[in-house]
Picture (cartoon, helix red, strand yellow):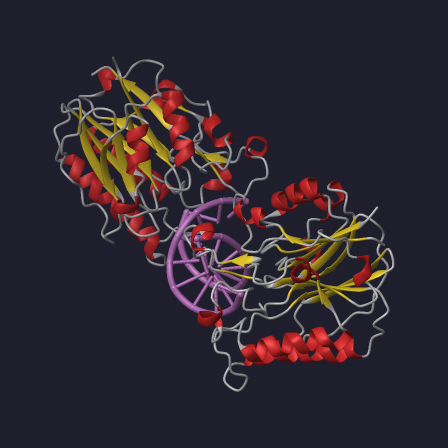
Length: 265
Length: 265
DNA sequence: GTCCCAGTGG
DNA sequence: CCACTGGGAC
């Protein structure tokens, strides 16, 4: 029985609890990593997750913005908490499931101006990447570790609808791509979705709400990621790493699609 | 064929257009007077009213607040417009249907403090009543005239859940009841719902959203009214004047229930 | 576009 | 409790 793991920026877990239930019913994830739950821990819809068969929870919430959670079919053990957010936002949550350490992040979007000196949000985003890079640089590559989340960077030229147009836009600037590359190199992570769907195939996990018809304009970005450590990469089931972009077409959707992988652990 | 007239404070016509359609389908009003449409004239869902068979419209709208409309199955002719609102709010709209003049009002709620000197909203409410009293005092009692709307006063002791508790609360204070009584006397209007359901039978058309179960606590008020002029009163179909309080139980309801009457004209 | 907030109004 | 306003964020 492989372990099915999913990551999804849900953009308010309370408002979209029905979509979460549908996703869990149709796709049967064993572990669901959520970002932008937009509620305090006490406001999280615990009963609904119990009803969907994901009763084991780790929640890092705050009022109104951000917030991350891990919901699991199997029991959760504690994983070392990471304090990558210098602003004290609820952007990191972790769990160990079936011996796999899962680190779930909602990395700051970074504002509009891609300049550390001018834009404190952009500086915060890069600082977040740097802290994670330092942290994971100290880890044992052989240990099974999964990084999941909305990392708010689309690294490759085929992870954006237009490399040329996006190169000066936050989420695809060279300095952000460099920060993400450094993080990936810190422990030798594998980007499982891109590994299974080589370039030049385009891959997007997010489409703006502003588009009239997101399928037609298709101005997407791949912001949501699943990365395996060298010790976990051999467990990835071939062909299982996918972005479920159909979910973006559901009624009152999140602007992000879920990303899934299966691990033979 | 009697003329069925309804009045309903809809608390946003755009948000509750489905409830309006259901009401029209189930109850078949020929004329529907709406209050608190909460949109500009250009934002009014004209096509939906055409689809429900009420294509003839008179709309007085404004951005965000207040706003009144009359929707009719039969053609509408102009009625004299009343300018009872000193603040320029969209609170009055009129029509002539089948020779009956219909004046539809959303009278100000009046704020919390029942003192003209201290509370300009309360002063505005009484001023609105005074202007209407003057206007209708000039009219011919023999002409068929219907006053409809959310008049924001519950006049009788059996029009409130507790006469004792409510007598110091805006909507049932003696000064407001006096203002409403004076307006009613100006042309000799008949309050058709109360005329057909004598005291001490309690009658409410509004229940606060704040109640957990409005049926259980039943702390209602009769704020919504249909009044006939002496020339129109003989046309009222016996037993036809009712408050449709079941509608308050529908999904995502308005806090007001519709009030209906049939006129043999 | 679609969420949050805090505030006002009822 | 519910629905507006206007601002911020993404």
